[in-house]
Image: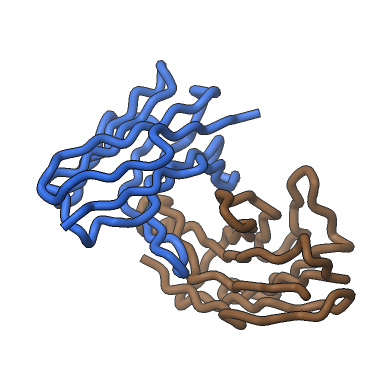
Length: 115
Length: 112
């Protein structure tokens, strides 16, 4: 398995500001994903972040709003820019563990509330 | 576009019962299917992964089946316990380079 740490775990943010979420993995992984879970909803894929390439965004998500960095095989960041109350969500980092048969593991999530 | 549906949306049963959670997906061309549980205020815990070439996987009291041609999977929980109370999520991957598409989950309550 893979152990994934996310920071911050929770935050309350002012509208119009930006927040960067960090994701640290205890092993080297090639494939990393970022998801959003809005209140009462299931998870939606934001983007795929593979080391050595630009992040690939899903329909409805853009780089200007959700810039992603992937500087190495154990770390990634997601920034939520110019936040509005509609960005209040849980943001989750996940990785593919090849050693575990391509099982996908998730971090505990970062709970953001925008006021 | 892949769509994943989970039935029922919510389920409340007495402790000790065996139960089945259902998941269906519209595009049968999947790479694998994974079941998760999510506890309130927590992230996701992986329960079972079924590769597209497999029919079922088992872990303890959990058994997941996959019928790719009909676009269905079931999660069977034997001898349910109050600790099984959580939201259960089904998710599929289209390919090895793709992320997961999730259903909306089944909110399960096991009554002591």
